[in-house]
Image (cartoon, rainbow, N blue to C red; front, side, top):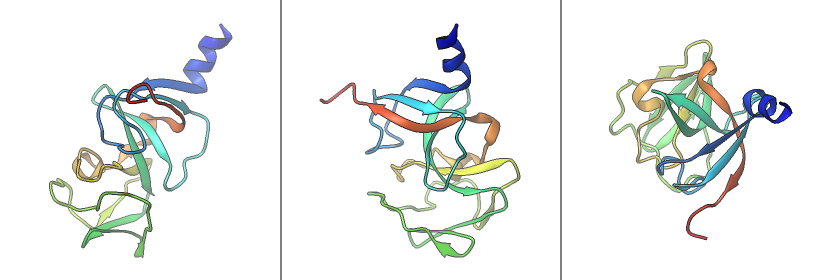
Length: 143
């Protein structure tokens, strides 16, 4: 019973299917999330989208203005310095920039920035769809 309560309310256990968070999280990795923490900018999270678990990095919160131009990410007029391997662009984005993050949501980008299947395509993620902050990644492939 205690394990069930922990897995439902405190931690989440997920398997990553895809490379949207490559190189941090690779296809097939086992990911453990912590559901009770406060989200911070730059935090890698698991979230639910169309019934599937996805992974992405929080870059902005409600009422923040997100601008992507010249492969630079800016939030509220300040450039966000990230340690990403891939450049950030609006190519393939469905939303228009600058984008103001609605209340009760977060703006999430994939670490593999060429994959625009993130907030650039479907807008901000409701906090209710956030499954928690990624705290442990267990490599199951390519060891």
